[in-house]
Image (cartoon, rainbow, N blue to C red):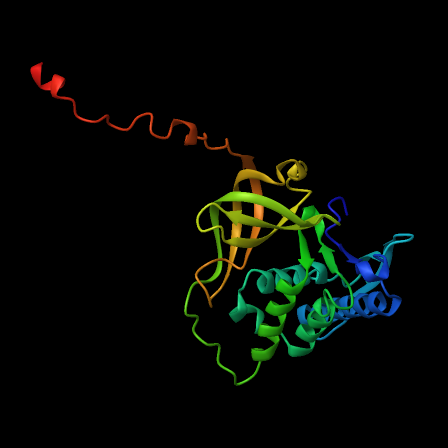
Length: 272
């Protein structure tokens, strides 16, 4: 399709201790879990019937990167829904903290997502999962934790605890110093050191959305971002930066200290 809305790409980045190479069994296990997740979504959308097969559309040489494309089993009885779009809906719900909705999915499907996200910073550095039109998710501790929380309550008698603070996403503006932590891949990770309180907020930014984002590292900036809140604290646990602009540095007024202080009273002033 023109927009490639029938395919999904998984890319894994290795650990520094492995010279950034990805272990073969890690890549194979996560790619297998991704295909299994697509199959489960396909059956979920079609009354437990198989309507798609999955082919390798692209496999990058020297890189743990593969693109999987869905293909209709029969043109006579075409699928009524896309498994790729269905999986995007699930991953978006988990990523954006919509736990109530994500927890309604079957537990085996959520377990597949958990296999994909498990082990960042231990078995691999991080990974990325790309859908069409530039929609991409960074697979790291943030997403791994959200998947774990959803899986624990999915289709069980467990009741979702009411959050003490706001749970979900909100669009906002934040000012501070932008520092990069990991510039590998398309979805970069960094931190924003806020002007107020010098608090550090974890953040990600997409090179597809902000091609010139590297120009703003270690500069005083104002960012517009989707802020993710976990319901356990007032501050967001991650910023998904959508726009950045540099701020002018505040003027240094220390050299004027004392120059505009009122001078001592002089009796001569009373004569006027």
